[in-house]
Image 1 (tube, rainbow, N blue to C red):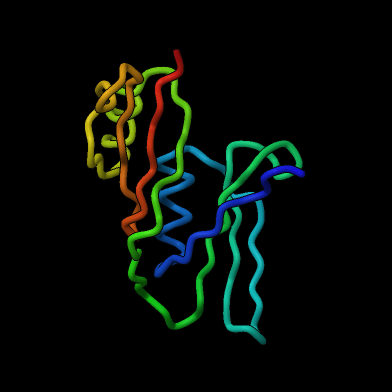
Image 2 (cartoon, rainbow, N blue to C red):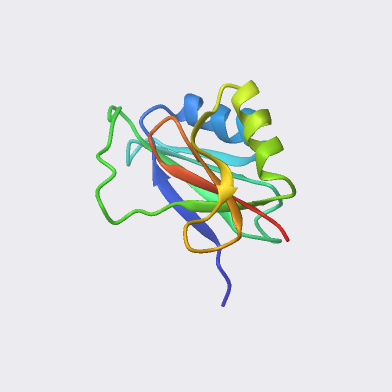
Amino acid sequence: MRMLHTMLRVGDLERSIGFYTEVLGMRLLRRQDYPDGKFTLAFVGYQDEADGAVIELTYNWGVDRYELGTGYGHIALEVDDAQKACDDIRARGGKIVREAGPMKHGATIIAFVEDPDGYKVELIQNS
């Protein structure tokens, strides 16, 4: 078995694709409309789906907002330098919700950014 993707429901597909590709630097890997089901799927990632896990952005036509609930945590991305990643993301219009610094009760350097729908993305500095 292997991890394939994480699915997020989004309220504005173009805005979300822009965030994950332009702000976080992923690539749009594929996109498919499903007219009978009235939804569109877009897959974004840093590598091809055959080589690693990706994010599936699901847009249900006519739904522009979702409640995140209390069960969702975050997506984690490894970065070389968390502070530089925050600076770069901020410069590209991203919203930093926790600046780079040591995690509570530990020494790992982390930061958090929020996507346009409010989903948290953790940046973890590699050691």
